[in-house]
Length: 104
Image 1 (cartoon, helix red, strand yellow):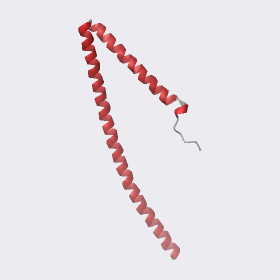
Image 2 (cartoon, rainbow, N blue to C red):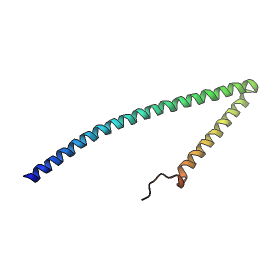
Image 3 (cartoon, rainbow, N blue to C red):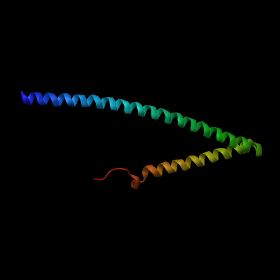
């Protein structure tokens, strides 16, 4: 009987621990969802700011030269920035020395 009560105590303690872990996991998941939502809003605002910045550059250049040339210059500037950021992303994800894996 003593072994049976010990097993029941262990199982009860284990179930209580699982319940506590479930609450911690739910709270962590909720925090993650909120963080992702705020990152999404921040990304949308950055894209809007970049659009207005490029529109401002276009309007400034259009006052100095023809609107076609201003459009070409702004699109070339945007394309160059896109290539730079794509190159940085490729470099960051393809460099095996930057791996964060833990070696045993």
